[in-house]
Amino acid sequence: MRVVFETTAAERGAPLDYVTAPLDGCEIGLAGSHQPWNAALAVQALALAGLSVPDAAIARGLRDVQWPGRFQLIHERFVIDGAHNPSAAHRLALTWQETYGEKRATLILGILRDKDLRGICEALLPIAGRILTVPVPNPRTASPQEICKASARSHPGRRALRFATCRRPSASRNRWSGARYITGSLFLVGEALAHSRPCPRPSPARNSRRLGRYKSLGLSPVCLATRESIRGPISSPS
Image 1 (spheres, rainbow, N blue to C red):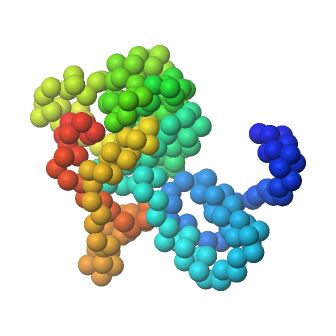
Image 2 (spheres, helix red, strand yellow):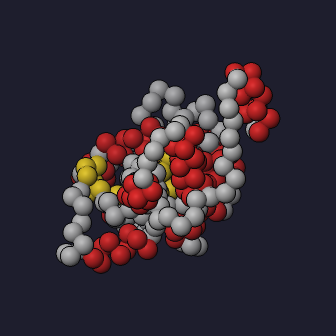
């Protein structure tokens, strides 16, 4: 990868700089141990662009940053994050483990057919308890059956179900309890966001307990309350 960068930069006469260490000493409002590296890249980009931004403004921006669809908690039981290639899926699994430890997730998984289905499923193996496969709102979607087959090859000990096979949600309430992770294609993440609406920021005075819970999860104190329709084809039975 480094050779590709250096060759391309040389061909185009463009300067090339590397970030060699994560940003330290700043609170970052995004979950994941990779985010200090992203923050370091953003700060260095500001410096290389010659933009004079006060340190206090940078610290405030990193602390308050919000990125919809990136390890975002909605409806208190759902986490949504895109993972449309094996590398992203691996990082997603690491972030889940950093946040929830050994707790397994019910994965609500939709992937495009032209992606590496098996590679994505293999990367998600460490955090998968059950897998609920769904279609993506795009003509390129892999069918739930195709994702089930890829999951079966990668997760021989995990059960993968097509959403259409879950015909008695009330009978499955206990089996599907716990945290749900809506992931895979960014189109699926977008659909989840489209079926949700922003909540007002919680008041520290009235909701300190909720803010403490979000902080313990490494999440920004922003919640999304889902509409009733989130109980449709993008969610597991409950």
